[in-house]
Length: 288
Ligand code: HEC
Ligand code: HEC
Ligand code: HEC
Image (tube, rainbow, N blue to C red):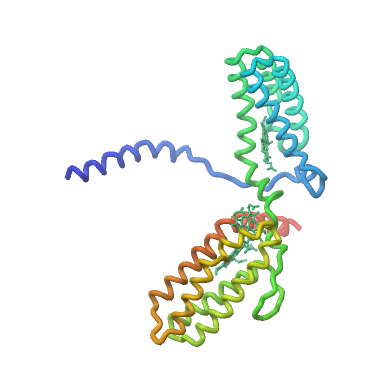
């Protein structure tokens, strides 16, 4: 009884505190970045101008605190002017985003910095910092997805079984079907068909290695998802199919390893961005 009580009390406390938090939970909306931002990123701009502007602001912002700590007031003043100037400049770059900026807050912060009074500086920095944070919370992931994540949709793979060239997404469907062909036939006791399915599946799966270099420069990434662990599990599947009395427990344990260490982990790493890009693209298509 004592033990049960000990379990119940903390659970009740958690619930009590969790309810108000849940009520205040916010949805995250991933809006496609505004069209005019594209002018500040390659290929439209030779330099990633938006990021350079961020570094400028962040350098001055941090510089004020570092130089305050060193009592280097001359440079505190320089950074104060630099920040207010860079902030105002940035606020004009993307018209769709102008409401995120509070140029007065930047000027107030610069004025506070010039007093060299740490308390006043901290207070004014909070108001300005909030404007940075709000835009980051709402836009940073969208910008990464749009301007940093390479589009998988442009990649083609030649199917080693049919020797046809396919889009990545279509290839995935084929891969998924040949995985099923092996496993469904195993379940039905049709081991010859399962073996044929498995051979095709393995060739198709390992052919994925030919795509890594389209986005990665380090060959070491191939230790993951398409590495030894998955290959060994495929050996295990085959060994079971060749056995006199195939053991379903052993076969499906290896299927699980391929599914988890291969498909699932690769999807968790790569697919979220691809899914978002695809939705934005569909929206564009619909507009046309
Ligand atoms: C209107 C939106 C917006 C505002 C306001 C804004 N930022 Fe940003 N910031 C972004 C976006 C979008 C990124 C992601 C850029 C990227 O990775 O391409 C970013 C990235 C950054 C980065 C990381 C740069 C990198 O190399 O990855 C820093 C540092 C930064 N911002 C500092 C600031 C500071 C300091 C302020 C306020 C004084 C600020 N930002 C205000 C939108 C904003
Ligand atoms: C469409 C482009 C694309 C393809 C194709 C691709 N990746 Fe990635 N992958 C990325 C990006 C972008 C990241 C995020 C970090 C980065 O840039 O390395 C990433 C991250 C990773 C990571 C996490 C560690 C790291 O380096 O960031 C691994 C591991 C990985 N990929 C393995 C692979 C393997 C193995 C293949 C081929 C079977 C592959 N990737 C194919 C774009 C791709
Ligand atoms: C190298 C990483 C990687 C591996 C390994 C991988 N996938 Fe994928 N998969 C992707 C990416 C990236 C997409 C998104 C493709 C797109 O949106 O065009 C995808 C998409 C898919 C889709 C959706 C296709 C569509 O367009 O509707 C299916 C189904 C799928 N994968 C199944 C599998 C199965 C089953 C396995 C394992 C046997 C597997 N994948 C292994 C990266 C991988």
